[in-house]
Image (cartoon, rainbow, N blue to C red; front, side, top):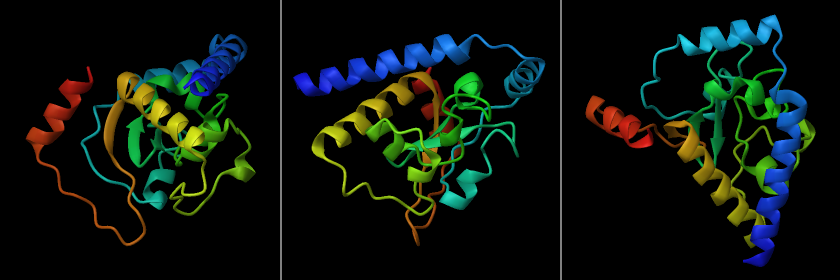
Length: 168
């Protein structure tokens, strides 16, 4: 537990330092991208394969999605961090679980195929769950990351509305 708190404190410190370095930048491209993102309607709930998720990297599409622990979040409002020029831009359109668990921002260390995270330690898995909770509190949950061969769920409008109002 103490180690977990220490890792969380380290992660928060790193995020704060990245915010000080990158979060206050305001170039015209970033402002235009944020304006475009703010005009986007809420995304209907759906499930994503890794290939489908990659389309939402903030470069090809103004909407930015990422997955943590099998759950996909719309992080478009955090484009300063997750956009193409942000410090966590490598996670956009990808499964960020391994990078967040290991505090690694090296794109070469991220996997391009489905990652079941089975080789992570208990401490690293706890870190993934903590990140998942942070994303749930801050961003809209838009669906699940599908395992290879898994079929997407069909969501009703009622489920979609209930989920979005729960997140606010």
